[in-house]
Length: 207
Image (cartoon, one colour):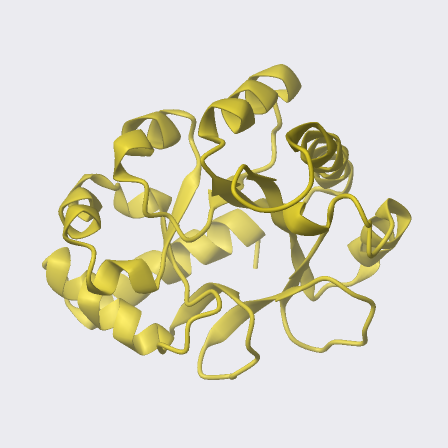
């Protein structure tokens, strides 16, 4: 079974968590939250996120986080991010993290809040912070970047299997292509990798 932990497209070629940020009726697994780029306009309110706790298809809050390249002032993003982390703790949902050049700030917030819910660093490519991210206990989700990023390909060897997820994000690459590349780099059969990711999925999301 292929698992796509974070995608913006509903392609139904795997078990997938589709990222959504507005009200809708959905019968597939999805994540729901205020993206840092939208943290000033608040395109949905926090009570709507809490209401989704009753929906068995809403598996995670996200993607949420901090972005120093795009979006409103960092302090506005921080407030929005913290509020949603607190909701995740209240409704017992993992968090899918968007982090662009803001790992130190995210780590400080994590240390302050001491969350019990799992955080998933999606679209991970920043090899220089890999050790810190692993030490903080985050799951690491690898996407299309693994196809051509040689530094990431080398760093993949240092990501423990139990902290690994795979995704497509907003890329048009298929999740199968990501699986095939990662299985080769980790010297695993495709079926072995499938079982690893499936086990992680069931453990983190209690499926």
